[in-house]
Length: 186
Ligand SMILES: C[S@@+](CC[C@H](N)C(=O)[O-])C[C@H]1O[C@@H](n2cnc3c(N)ncnc32)[C@H](O)[C@@H]1O
Image (cartoon, rainbow, N blue to C red; front, side, top):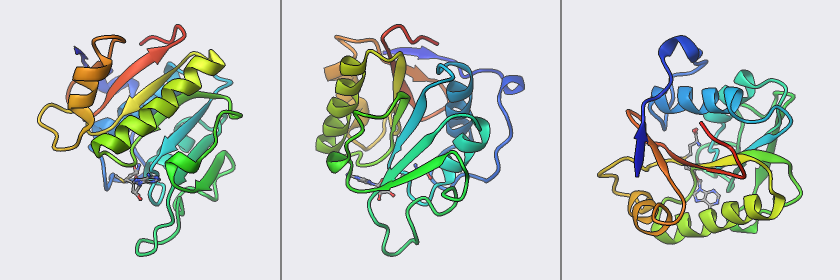
């Protein structure tokens, strides 16, 4: 798997919140990627948005894009996407990821941050991959929990099942890996 350095601090913006689930570098990289490398007309889908901390950062970083934020209902933690749902460019979708239809959305980035078990990440990846195959949109899939030594199923799946066929890039100093489709590149 190829490894790259994140962009310099001078190219990333400060965050609204100290992240709860991510390293700050993860959130800064995702906002940079969305802002700088995803074509302006395309939206972003976050699978597993929880209460919407990252959603909010993405929405503020990209005020002219639609951010679709998806999660199950969160019975003990509040409402899905509650931190971001009031922003005009945020659409919250409440369902399990495998029930969600997004083939009609115009996306340039799909961030997989829901079920990190091997069956979960395989299912979400197949769906996201199919999206870029079928739409021909230029864009990226980004996986969370892809750092070396991660206890989730993400890293072995990417190393053994994806990278041999389609290049996956790990972003050093983060927990993120990504792949570009239909000409999208860093
Ligand atoms: C690490 S948290 C996400 C954090 C969020 N992206 C953020 O940056 O604030 C993982 C979330 O994935 C959700 N999740 C797990 N499996 C899911 C599935 N199959 N469908 C939808 N959401 C799922 C959980 O409910 C949880 O809120």
